[in-house]
Image 1 (cartoon, helix red, strand yellow):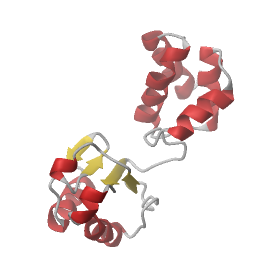
Image 2 (tube, rainbow, N blue to C red):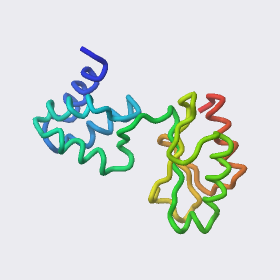
Image 3 (tube, rainbow, N blue to C red):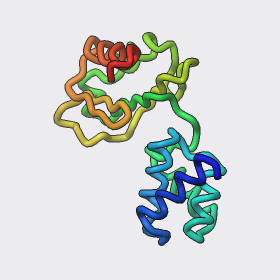
Image 4 (tube, one colour):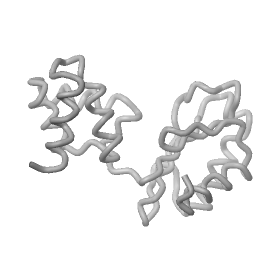
Length: 156
């Protein structure tokens, strides 16, 4: 049994094998494997006795259910108008320069992926950055770069 098989089996045991279990199972796969491969989606479909198209449709609809491999640390910058007005473009530019990648790309060492998100729910504290599951509000360029350096040195 592969790691993916065992993971999906454990997630189905935890969440059940009904259609209602699809989201938590997909979230669990992404949390452990950093993305949803075609093989994993097929195995989830089989385990829940639903179509592969339904699993893929769900996975591709939700921003946080990555269907392509991401880096160890996924950075998401909020791109709402509030964060835009508070300087998110300068933060994105600084991160692109620091990491030597553009939005949507992953560093060659697979440590960082830089993305934007439609809303992170922290408009009152923008600009906001989410790294994996950790939120960073009230950003400045300097604070964003310091945070990235902490992750680069594996202190997070």
